[in-house]
Each structure stands twice: as C-alpha cells, then as structure tokens.
Image 1 (cartoon, rainbow, N blue to C red):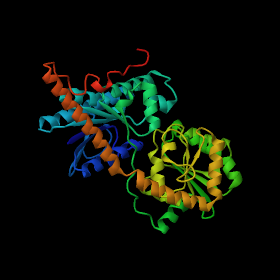
Image 2: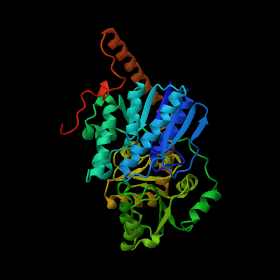
Image 3: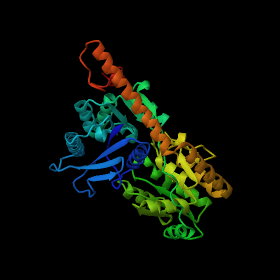
Length: 426
C-alpha cells in the first residue's frame, strides 16, 4: 500500500503536537511495510531539504513560490496549490498512490483535489476544531476555518480523531455520522535516552536553586493552553511551598500578557519564561521537574501529557477533553477542574507535599505509556482504517459496473460514507 500523507507541519518545522504525530505515525507505518510519502507545504522563508528518502518513507517539502498573500487564509490556499503541484509531478513521473490521508483543515484543498483527480479515497485526521480552540466562532476568519474543517470531514470517507471527547465534538459541531468516525489515540515515542544525573542537575540549575521546587510547563503560549490559570494558581502554591519556581517554556502571542499577569500577582520573581527550547532541554527538564503541568482549557488529546509521562515527570493536568482519557487521576497523574486555578493549586500542593505520591505517579505513568500508547499499535489501527476504506471503494466500483451505472468517483462527491451529513442550518 502506498500512502500519501498531507501535513501542515513536519520536523524540523513543528508548531504543536501535529507535526510530531505525523512524523511518528508515518515512520511506524513504514516500519510495518507500507510505502509512505509525506508531503509538507513549506513557507518561502523556511529552510529544509525538499526531498528526503528514508527507505519506505519519503518526505517531500513543497515550497510556496507565489507572491506574498494579503492574509492567512490566502497563504494556506497558496501552500495547498504548491502541494498539489508536487503530487502531480510525482504522478507524472510514474508514482501511484492508494489513499490520501490529510491532517487538519490546512491541507483540505490539496487533499480534496488529489482525491477527485486521482480517484483515490481520502481519510482525514482532525486534531482539533476552530470552535473548540476559541470557545466559539467570533470573526469571519474563524468561521472560514470552521467551514473548511466541516468540508474536509464531509469529503473524507473516514475521519480519525484522537479521543472520545474529540469524537463527541465532531458529532456536535459538524454532525459527522458516528459510523464515519474512528477513535485512535496518539502515541508517544519510545522513552528517549535518560539523561545522566549531571545533565539533569545542570538543566535544573539553569532555572532553580538546589533547594527550590521546580514546576514545569511547555507548550504554545495561547489562551487555550491555560498558562494564565497556572500563574493565577501560583500565589496559593507559594503560600504552601515558598521555595518554588515555575518554568514556562514556549512562545506565542500571550507571552506579554502572561508576564504582566505575573507582575500584577506579585509572583514575577518566581516565574522563569524560557522561550522556545529544544527537545533535549525539554526532556531534561521533565526529568528534573518536581511536577509537570498541562493546564489546558481545550485539549483534544494532549500529546504533551504523554511525553511527560514517558519521561517519568509527576503530572498535574486539567480534566479537559482527551486529557481525562489519558491521565488516570491518582494513578498516572492528578487531574484538576478545567479552568479553575484554585483546583489546580490544590493538586500542585498535593503533589509537592508527598514525595511518595510523586514516585508512584512516575512509575504508573511509565507503565501506562508502554502498555497503551505505542506508535506501532497506533499505526496498525490506522492501517485497518485504510484497508476498510479500500475494500469499500472496490466494492462500490464493482457494484457500479455490475449495475451498468456511471462509476462514482472513489470517495466523492462528499464520500458515500457521509451522505447523511448535513451542515448546521442547511
């Protein structure tokens, strides 16, 4: 089977968890014997090799050479045109693909064109929705993105999502039929090399004294990630554990406001804004931290929680969306009420109060990661979806030929599997 995978990000150009998801999934699919071509749309200023051959896995990066667009939506379309051009060039050179797998709305235009032009089924993974990220739709750009998400779900034969919470969201927001949805959780890479005690201590000392407790957050500094809740919880944590330092790693549009909030609450001296950090530094800080925190308001899955668990960081997370399915309260982590800084403070204090609890959380978290979130298992379940769609496509073609009817394009229009799907309000 030859899989064409379209993605808006791929290492080294990673914004959030989606890029790492595609990298690990594509590698695992190739390890299982499939041929995988990953196509990533590059912005003009992004530097990377445009073709990487890794055995059964090929990574293509299509650069957008069009004039600078006036807005974000136009930029996305231009990158999709560049991706489509790259696909057509491969097809002209003799490549044949069995399925196209699109990740999120940023690849929807190219994915739909490939589906209809090449007559191959489209599978979509929707990692999050614009409505969920923002708690509603408040401007024309957000409504356009939401419409494109719906369009991608409509065009796909099957839609993969990462949690039961996300499945419920897709049914509620887009009325995607349940029999079209498949829940396949994210995986996490095998536990990386454990840093030496000296490396861990060195990373810790960059932010905290040996006598201080270290709370660690890493992620984009945007509203949905709830970093403001973490800073609001800090005064109460400091009342119980005065020698505590919060390290906030990541970048985003909320940073200036978060810094102002820390000053207003009188905790500026206890917060370290680390900016963007590399994977190695992130892993060392997970191992150095007394507690890692995922305070998200909205989290369809929370791959960052899995990464913390794999590295043995005692975890405090919001009981929001997929996080509540990943973290077992009291066993693999501690959950707090989403959006509630006081509940977050209580769980942080509980973790800091009891070393034995932290040790137990570390042990059980690592066990859960090994047993439930292996990328090979994720890839096997994804292959099952591809096979079921290819079988249905062949059956549809045979039925059409036997009945003498016009052959319906594979997966379109709108995909036979989605005939009941309606857009809200008509």
